Length: 267
Image (cartoon, rainbow, N blue to C red; front, side, top):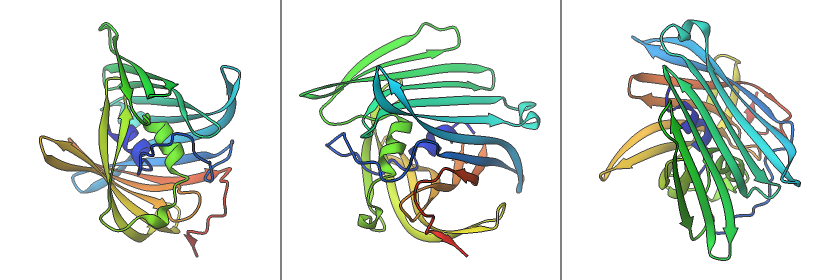
């Protein structure tokens, strides 16, 4: 489950545009999404926790902004084996430009905190990052990006408004992501379209399917396959995760305050 927060937040980060501002067409203040998390153990799927994402309009440094948070928590049963309490919070402008990001993660017996702040100049984006794990000293780093840089949640918010009709099967898109330690290129591959029936809610969706791939020493490893609704909302409805210690899945079970008609929902 360690990769779950990263993959949920990366599932819409399909393109990095040279123009940071963008028009939001996918969500409104008040959107709230809820997920059930499952883990595979010896061919049996067990529910191990839940996740929720919430978006609100707020004031950030006296300017209107969106605040989005993503919370993942393990169940009491799962806590006996592995404790997981993770919270990600991101602030973006009304035109989806990243402002500030914080991730606080308590996983197993380890606690870590990542923080990212953005400053914009005529030459691009200046990114200040910090990383702290347990009682170790905080590590600080700054980088300059000629175009745009995003954290996991701000990428999610912006990319939900992209025109998915332009994607072709096999398209590979790279983008820059800041995570508190560094700012690196990531890769997403479009796998095509597929209908998905959520066996936990009996709802059937028309979806776009993507894979998040990690690249290390020219070796590619598929970390997650995710399904997003093929409509103006681009809601993540399913994630299939390949973890170091097994397989996990996340399913959307409830969506409130959705901005657009859910035209991908099949009857």
